[in-house]
Amino acid sequence: MRVIFLICLVFFISIITPASADIFTPSHSCSKPYKPIEFNDQHEIDNFMNEVEAYKQCISDFVEEQNDAARKHQNAAEEAIDEWNNYVNYELN
Image 1 (cartoon, rainbow, N blue to C red):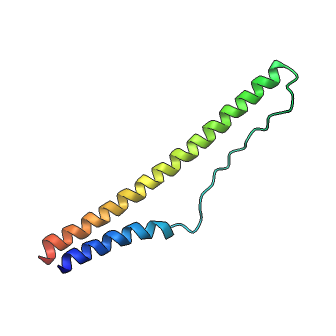
Image 2 (image 1 turned 120 degrees about the horizontal axis):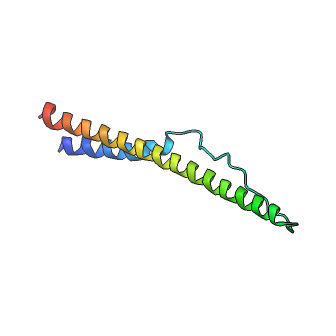
Image 3 (image 1 turned 30 degrees about the vertical axis):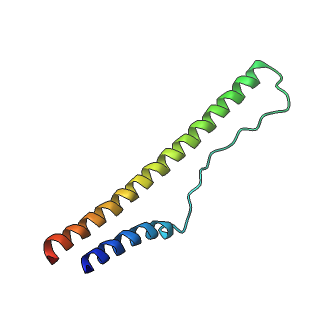
C-alpha cells in the first residue's frame, strides 16, 4: 500500500512541478509585417509577401523549438518516474 502511495505521489509531483519550473515565459522575437493602406507597385507587393513569409517561418521555428523543449521536459519527467518505480520495485521489495 505504501509503495502505491509513493508512486502516486511522485506522479502527481511530476505533473505539478513543470507548471512552476519556469519563472520566465519565453516569447518570440519575430517582427510582424505591417500591410500598407495601398501598394504602389508590384515590387511593394512582393516585398510585403516576402516579409509575411519570413514572419510565418519565424513563428513556426519558435513553436518548433518550444515543442522540442516540452518533449525533452516530458521525457525527463518520465525517466525520473521510471527510475523511481525501478528503485521501489527492485531495491525496496
